[in-house]
Length: 353
Ligand SMILES: [Zn+2]
Image (cartoon, protein in one colour):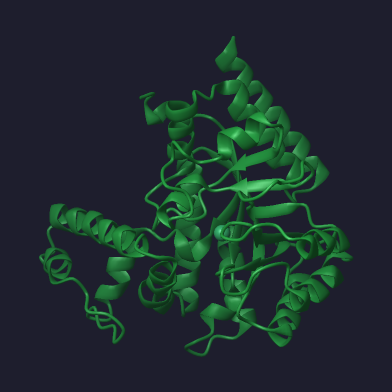
């Protein structure tokens, strides 16, 4: 297999990444240790706790690896478990300004180390108010980390969740507009199988923010097939970016934020080799490659590229094309898009010379 370093060195654009699915396992253990690993919702695996508490660096590295393996295995058993892993293991750690700032800062640092030059990072601010933070405090903590980033491009996407309602969507759309300098998109996320389709209450608010220049994305057709109502509502909202979007006879004008390993982990696709990404790409769909989250998938964008190379023989031309698709579909300014495109063209040209 081609060494991972080759793919890390390629400048890459990542459009679809959830902040609460991309924490560092080591940071999680460090933060859990501050609470004596006390979580009423699940017993912490004793072996991991003991390794961590030994205080030895080598043991703590081992504990972090074991913790991630444990989470990947647990989350991979079902979509319900995947959500439970976020609720029980991650969200309790994301309820303070300091932790939110640190977790965002580290995610951006990890992106930089993975060769990502532009990142659209999504999160649901309302999930971080369980211990008293206001939505403004949540936004400001995350924005502080973004604001301190000057070497890669970062924008935020605010997510409403499918099991929520119009009242929540209204609050979130107000946040999108209030922090519009940093927020580039408004998304509908969470379990599509339980609340399928382009939900009307979300679309009503989404159209409002779209008119103020906020882009719209939606998790769609990951677990459910396209319907005529979906297509009508997508047209109504002028929504072209689909999170996952791997099912059914897709239409060419949609940009597909495909997350191959994530689809395998959640059981939507049997294996990477059987993933439809290559077929969709060959048929001319606007494919982009994404991680969805690095924690429960144990992946990175470089690893996704490495797998695409290994299973489908993608070369520099293919990687450049999916990045061109990503730049074009991103919500960065025209000036930033032009800069990114130039940066990529030079880097990928060097490889093919
Ligand atoms: Zn997603």
